[in-house]
Image (cartoon, rainbow, N blue to C red; front, side, top):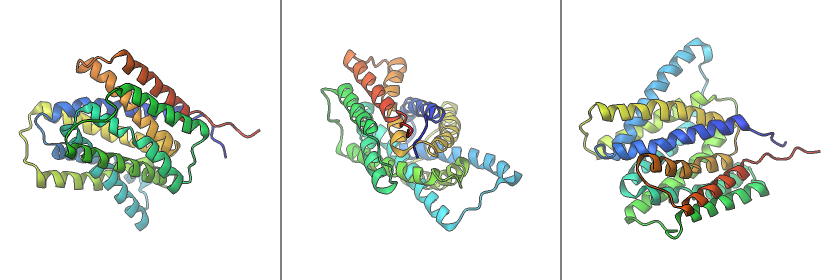
Length: 297
């Protein structure tokens, strides 16, 4: 069955990626005084608390979901991959690597998700979507030319590799869970985030010293938790019910352009003409991946 244009979920996914792009700036500021795993753990565990309170209020009205053992297992795996591993590696990677190098490596999740979605989800990208992926990666190459290979310490490159693999696998698992309408986006988010954030915060407390947190640090954490996490991740899981894993992955990788623009505005990093060309090509690639399929005549 062919799909009609999905304008609303695409716009919602773009809003989420914008919020997540602003997170990079806020994380960079916060890492000056907060260890990465504790920082990530506090962000996601606080977001879980906010969502749990809201979910408890919703479920009290008679909407409590009935989770099976298989549901708990799937959501636990999703939480560990998407929050404990992927987000923990992101905070750690931003501490170990320059943002440009780290951002470049993360873009390789798009073709990996496309391949994994064929194997595990039976979601075969159309020829236009494959062209979009190629155009997208071409834009990434133009943006970072001539520094096509990232530089940085080996530990940082390994962490980035873990991030790419975990993000790709979590995109597949998240799509598998969310494309079935039995579980709503709030349930998926609050349960998976609760499990993943508890493990992430526990690892941070076990491995890192507790920082001195003033009101600016708590304000940063609170904004990241409530807006960029509780709201954004719930909306993202909603879009996964409609968009394919390949579409979601490429839209997510559009953060490359958004992060560059935010760095230009707030960090004084001015893109060159080649950078602008690369970002334009990236936008074309995203548009092709989300090009509507033809209805059968």
